[in-house]
Amino acid sequence: MNTAVLSGTAGFNPESPSERSAPDVPGTHAAPEAAALGEAASAGGKSVIRPLSAADRQRARNRQIVLALVAPLAGMGLLLLVWELAAEHSAQFPSPLVTWASAQKVFAHPFYNNGPNDVGIGWNLLASLQRVAYGFGLAALVGIPLGFAIGRMKFLNRMLWPIISLLRPVSPLAWLPIGLYVFSNAPAAAIYTIFICSIWPMMINTAIGVQRIPQDYLNVARVLDLSTWKVFTKILLPSVMPYMMTGVRLSVGTAWLVIVAAEMLTGGTGIGFWLWNEWNNLNLAHIIIAILVIGVTGMVLEGVLMLLARRFSYDEAR
Image 1 (cartoon, rainbow, N blue to C red):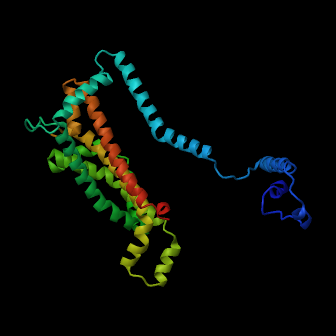
Image 2 (cartoon, one colour):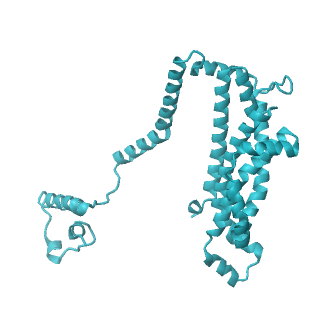
């Protein structure tokens, strides 16, 4: 044990009676005590814990402000700088100001409707979100219960895991022709592709969460003779919820990626079709606008699900 630290810390070395009776003369003990504290702070590489001063708290707040505001703004500034440099070296590539001017025109009337294949960007975005909701909802209805079953039943786990390992790495676009052949309908094929690609993260994460439930919990439930419904609602669901929410978040990101690619190939309405149509028109400014809309929408979906994941996190609950 480091005796220097103990001797310099109040409460660990009580004074003797003679030390308590000695008078305190100003200036005689301040310097030795400061030196003792300095030795205690430096001895053995250990430091004495002291309360933060007002200046320290202000510096901590300034660091938080820099991390929360200045750092993201610096990243956006760097992106705009690279974008501007790329535009200066290409006559056809639009600069940020040119793209901003085009965006003002695009978003001035986002919900116009001049026919089946000529609608505003707002309608295209809503059409994509609707397909994502359908495909993702079906994947959740199938994938989450199946994940619970795979995690609980070893035979089902051994039976389905090779199939999951085989089909999960398949590219989303490889499923699209199958959907077109089966459904003979482009929107239905896109929803099917979203379903088949977004089901895996939810299923796998839910199954892993079920497998990581401590066996002691299940033993207590068996001793108490809890019903299957009680075991599910009181043990399985609360324990698996963080894993399940992580799978849901990953699945939504996958679904949003898939729908853009599927709409570029199937046509009709949707943000992916709008992007591809602007490429056919060689309108690079509108292509960049579509990319930014896709990115912002995905970021919003990710943020909402991150909040939900924290809400159901075990660490946050404690």
